[in-house]
Length: 400
Image: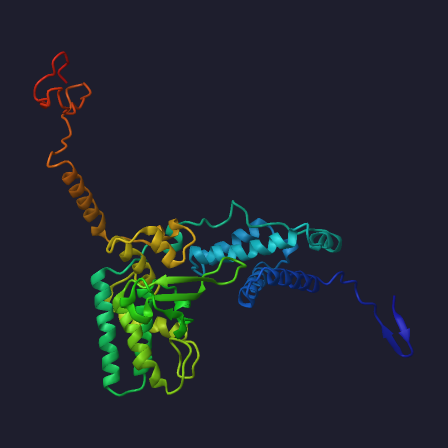
């Protein structure tokens, strides 16, 4: 029906129904508030919301229109076309799954409202049938490995030479190179994650009364450890085990930091006093490691610490697990990547120990008789103190 007002005519607007975009924005705002109450960071929350919006854009559907087949097609595209790795796919699926769990929860009115407005409801589209598997092989990749001891020596020798060359040439960047190399030594020397490393302050070091030979650098307090989801950053105290790493830090604090010309709080600052960028450390690492072959990344320094402390220096696995800040010792086992020679050396060590315990008596595997099971005659003492002769049958016994 046309409505006339004076000389103007107005056509009625079609009934567009409820605003879908506005409703989705309300649901996402509610989800954002719920995540704030669980202590998630703004960065994590924004990433999750963006992934939900990306999924909407990719499928051309709103969440109450999603089906498990939409998830299959989307994540198949990410793998086969965009080439994303298994770990990234798991992260994407986790974000979408968390949103679906929130939106479909009976504790919130979204699904009931959705059914009333649009005649359909939201459901969980990430199920056991299409969820990416969490396996160590998929997560870690076949090429990741720890440094061999000679590779670690070669790596830091080259790094020290580069620092000396840059400083000696009197070009810009010598102090930054010194800082980055010291940071890489600390990364290995205390088995740190790269984010823990970047956020260290000078005051985080303290003496260890049980290890006075490390001076002021016997203990390291890590204040920004990896947190569980929704929990604050974990803190731990790491005991110093690598003397040359402690010496490198002492030299940096005494002679390197004063060159900035102003008091510094952070252990590895920029020229303006801020935190060193993660990309700067990574670029420096790549520049040093290129000659050592594939499979080595900056996290490999932490991986190498876990491996060397156990397989080379013989520290207890539980102790190293505490040093690394792992909640479970099994996680440390995954980190520990012994060299190919480790199994052989361990077997040799155990066999040598057993041979010493046997007082020189070799334990030989008995030969099998034809078609009959062999029995081992264990030599035992007679009542008169003499020994049984294993080559002669016992009195009253049977010959094996």
